[in-house]
Image (cartoon, rainbow, N blue to C red):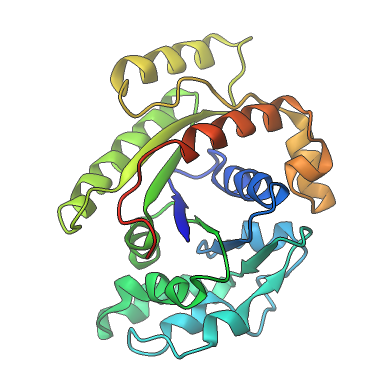
Length: 262
């Protein structure tokens, strides 16, 4: 199983959209995909018609066993999505309380890695939608992953969030046997604005080794797909953003990853 995390320490940069778009394209290609919602806001969970405010069970249950994961629990929590090849480990708003609980528990940093290990062989890919805050949930996302995707809105304030994310990654990598590979993805790009053009130019100058050379354009079809509860490629496989995400997926699949085949 290939495990990718999608993360940034700033909200509103396209993390959930990027996670779902990439997962949907993999599912379109016949891959078995599990998507993991680790954001207490539950945007990915809501996307597919599940209510994070009222779910009785969610990924929160995985963190309630002192760092161990009971056999079969991750499988029990899976929910359907709009795509037959894709299932969801859902979030719930109670996840927001996890940070207050975690100081009294040990071994919580590897809960998601252990959970996905139970699904190894049943799924080809896992894509984790991480919260925008550094804490036990983001640590879990990064610890479980072999490759990190960092969406960055092409505007100045988002670049400051990227600096924090790269700094966090450096800290995480010091505790890993192999550094976590990462790809920076410019999102919400609008060539009509000087702000987008300047931000993209700065990204290319600052992060030449890790930057995906293209970008994800602003595309209203992404919002329409979300409203319909369909992956972007299910909704419109020829939209500008889907064409861009297809190119991004090809790029990511060609990258060497750390610790593949958990």
